[in-house]
Length: 431
Image 1 (spheres, rainbow, N blue to C red):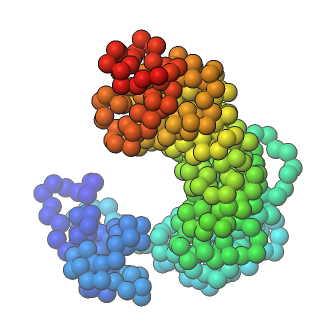
Image 2: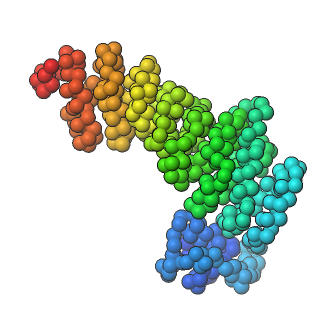
Image 3: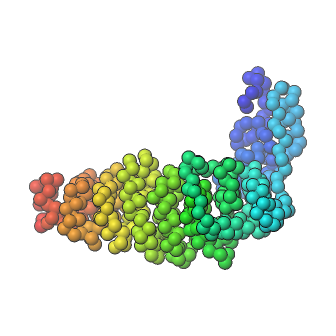
């Protein structure tokens, strides 16, 4: 503990079994073991463990809320006073559903009360995980936040574009810039980290949540778009294919714009994950192509492999693989001056999974879009050279190597005169 004299020995029962630090807010589980509230709530609710970490006793839904250990807290505070150790402040009591309902009711009465009430709700959520769960479980609270977002996201009043410097990624809700009801409501909804059941209720409501997120992603507010793409990722992971298939062109365009504008490194990766999910269903691949996704991905991959982020590079290649599954995507890729070149580089420079996706995309091009000009460009930018490397080295796995071999056989007549083909290889791929 910071500020604790080295000669003072802390009683063992003052220490949290998880953090091994003096407990600030001791609470007891149904198993009888006492922990610091922050540590045990992270263990149970954030990390998702279903048992007491010390006894391994399984915790039912009713047993997961810990009980404050006021006696131990008073002992710890008394000991701190005796040993001239700075006392921990008495923790505030967790909020209850009645208080949350009162705040939500006040927020419905007018714009002036709305902003103040939302900020109070944001402070409550930020205070503890216990408060966060209380707000989430209060009837009507989540639906109210969604309604605020929907109402203000539909406001098309022009506003000046806010830069990333104005609102850093993940800005706290009490930032001077986070003044609009939509920004605060988005921030609260994201901070709630809704459970599967809560998301199901949100998505089953009459108003289309995807359309609301499409409006949010078109807003000029950096903060709104950042929280919007984070919420959209959580939403699409809970949606059945039928809902994903019906995603609007405006929604897909909004997701692509996060990549195009390079909103932030984290936001771009989240947007790529959303595209990976959306492009599996319906005509979403075509919608993404029409929104400029191919060009955005090429530019991203050209940017020193996504600014040094291997994960972003891999996600970009996976999305490109999905897009090359349609004729429109392949056409855009071969039309881009650097399209085939970045895919050639991805074959050997990203990861095993990236190699597989890149080879699959190139295989689709070689099979369905192989004009003489495309074949010559594949030779010129190094695609053929890297395919030969895969066949000879075999480091990327059987499937990529087999696809590479198929492409070389498919177009051996055009490529076999290349200097990268040795006499032995020419014999392996006769014209």
